[in-house]
Structures are given as C-alpha cells and as structure tokens.
Length: 310
Length: 310
Image (cartoon, rainbow over all chains, first blue to last red; front, side, top):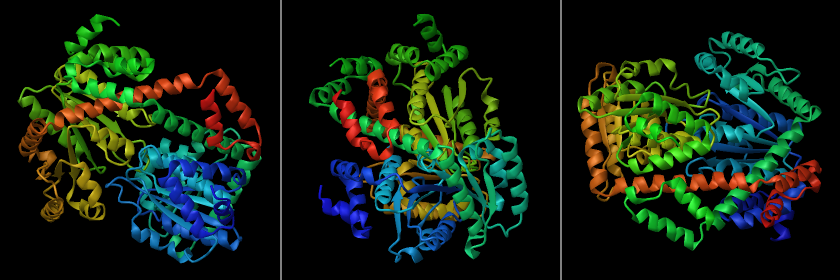
C-alpha cells in the first residue's frame, strides 16, 4: 500500500479519495489494507443519517445543511444511497442536482451509491467509505437515503444523529406506523411546512413523542422547514449540534463507535469464512447433491452438518 | 421429533402447521430437525411471488387468485410479509381483511409475517415456512409483499413466478426505474384498470418489454385487472399456469429448486459458524479491544485476522 495514497487522502485530494472508494468497491483485499492503515486517523467525524419518504425534500435539506456547516467552517462529505426498488420512486438524478452547487467546493465531497446488486454488503461498504472521509478530516458525514427497506435502515442506524424528513401530507403514515418512526428518529423535520397540514402534523408528532418514555434519554425534536427557501435550516443545525453534544456527554458517541467496530469485525469474519469454507471438495460435494433428484437429496440441514464435519 | 407432528402436518392439520411454524420461528434446533424430516415430502408446491407499491391492490388480487385456484381444486397457502419501514405505508390490517373470507376453508392457510426485527433471517424463514406448506400438500404457495427493500426482493425472487402489480398512476415510476421492473416480473398486472391511464400504461409497459432481448426466454405478459370486481382473474390464472408450464419445460423449475437448496445450505453454515466462532476467549478479546481508546485499537481488519488465527 503506497503511503503516498494515504498522505493524499489525508490532504483531502478528491482524486485520491475517489481512488480509495474504488478500491473498497472493487478490490476487497487492497481496500481492507488501506482501511487498516487509515484506521488510526479515524474516530473524529460526526455521522448524520437523513431519511424519509420519496419526494420529502431530503436532498434539498442536505444541500442546506452543507451550506450551514460550511459557514461554520466544517468539511462535509455526503454518501447518497439510491434505492434498489423500482417502487420507491426515490432519489433520482434530479434530486442530486440540488447538491451540485457544492461540487466545486474542495471541502465538500458528494458520493452517490446504488443499492442494486449490493445485497448484504452495502451497509458495510457505506461505513467503510465513511471511514475514508473520516481519515480525510471531514468533520461531518451525511448519509442520505430513502427509508424504504432494511438495508436503508441499517445504513441510517449506523449514524450518530438520525433525522427523519416528513411532509405535511405524511400524517396518515405517521399514524399508521408510529412505533417504527419513533424508534429511528432523533430529529423530525416537517419539510414543505408552508403546505396545509403542517401544524396539525407537528401537534400529532409531538403528542406521539410525548407518550414515549425516555428516562433521561434524548427527547426527539420536531422542526418545521421549507428547504427550497432555506427556512428552518439554522434551527435544524442547532438541533443537530445539541444532539451531538448530548451523545458526547452521555457516552453514546463511544457506544456508536464501538458498535460500528463490532459490526465490521463480524462482517469481515463472515466474508473470510465463506471464502475459506467453500474449497474444491465441498463445492464438488454440493454439485453431487444437486445432481440427485430432490427426493434422494439430504435435507439442506443434514447436508450442512455433513459439510461442517469435513 | 414426534412422528405424530409430521403425520398431522401431512394431513394438513392447521393446528399442527401453526405449531411447526412456531418451532421454526422460535426454536431453531427443533425447527431444523422438523424441516429435515419433512424434506423428502417437499418439492411439489408451486411458489408465486406478488409484489407492487402500497395500495396497488395486491391483497385483493391474492384473494381472487385463492378463489380461482380453489375452483381448480388446488390447495393454497399465503405468506404475507408486512414491511419494516415506517414509510412504505403498505400492507396494514385492513388489507388482510379481504383475505379472511378464505380463513374458514380447510384447504387455504394464510400466514402474516412482519419484517421488523427480522434482519437477515427473514427470507430464509419464509422459505422454511414454505417448505412446511409444501410438505403439507399445498399446491400453491403465494408470497405477498410490498416491494420496497432488499429483503422483500429476496423473498419474492425465491418464487417460481413473480407477478408485479401496478396501477394506472404508476406510469412515472415505470418510466423512472424501468430496468429494475423488467428484471423482477414474469407477469405484470395493471390493477384498478377502470381508472384513467390504464391503457396508456399498458402500451408503455409493452413497449418497454419489447425492447428487452429475451433470446428464447419467457416474455413477460401484461394483464389488466379490477380486483374488487374480480375482472381479469381468469386471464391472470391462465397466465400463471402458462408460466408454470414454461418453467417446467425449460428446466427453470429445477434451477429454482436448486437455488433454494443452495441458499439454505449457505444460511445454515453461516449461522452455525457464527455460533461456534464466538467462544469465551474470542468474546473477551473483543471486550479488551473495545476498552482501549479508539486510537490504540487494532483496525477491525487486523483484529479480525488475529481472531481467525486463534
């Protein structure tokens, strides 16, 4: 592993960061070695997860937050995860355009990733890419995704602060699945708050949140925004910073870091094991089994036990 | 494992089938032993996956298909998977009510499952429950789910025939993410076809489908339905049966079966391994590492390598 690449990443060369991301995505072994070498420089960035239904204005809010953090002289990286599903209708190219104003800023890095084809490994990969940004002295890492499936939730839940973006029309959804909503969000944003129903949703949300028992824990806040007019961004920023302080004071920040560490260890072990386990003998045993009629096969469980004895 | 339970499952006792499903969900070891003993009776059922956006009418169509299959004297089991995400808004209790008319029929079994908390294991569990139904002589197993995330897609893609349910208003979604749609569906249904835009979507879909190259493969069909009036059900049934015949003639059925077998072997191995790997020594090594300041820790990859050497 070239120490040049490491130095260039730490100096925030966009080219080198892109190169590092490619390594992680395409060359597992080299990617891991790089991450190992960068590890001691990580642990500084703050991770924000932004999720919500399609069309709620997540990308516009993200763009506003980038501006707000830049005014505080914070460096910001964005990992925007586009959905797999043909039905979520979510983050398409148009949404991303709102962020492009920041592309020329050397202290802002925006990276899009697709969930398609990334079964299982995507949450890990987004964490690894976050590590690169962390080592490259980005203060803030924003994970933005349409909250539609387990993968997206995995990604978002690895963040230090989770912001759920809703619109005034989200009232029914909130009512229907309140338990799920309450669990995810540290901060709730009602975007497009100039539309009818905004105040009503605000009251509904606050009521729901007040019925939860938090025993000395963070009580989620609700903020109204109009992203296209940059209304509410300051309040949002303040809320994120206060949640960040809360996490640090209560030791939650360390807990989040430790959880990320453990998840990555477990993911590495699973990959390594899968790779070593399926040697030629075992592969050929599987082929033999598959050649039999299904009636004559061992059950998958019995067959697995046999393989494990090898 | 009591042979009584096996006999009762094969005799389609609803109580015993429920008991078997509980075993699979709550007692891994007993569940696996049961599945192993049932394995030789499986391989007969045909699996249909039904997916689509929230509110498209999947449950109503499923209810119609149950009636249609019952007229052909087929026994039908339904596994309805409800979404994890608070945003998908999908299958809530109301939807299920449409199927309850069939609950009293001894040859119909409907089972709801929630994705919440089922990370990773859900697709496997729905397959295992499918095996129970297969051994219990159900001819048709319907997997119904809102197609919103990777887990749902995993479940659906394990089916032999995949039906995507759309509504006339789905036009934009179809345009935006056509590649994803094309990959999943064997049969496309435009439900609520009495609403404006139905014919337009039909033409759009057919055009999109005709630009794909299928070299001698199944060419997806598009069918218009009005589920609440049972319009189009016969055509749908015919289409499913013709896809089933196609799968059998072309050896695709065997391929699907083999893939399910391999997936289950791999899932068992991963579970078994995870369980054995984390012995007390390794757990305590992890705790020691987590007690260090993050700077002094080994990188997750280096630490994993150390564990693997134990």
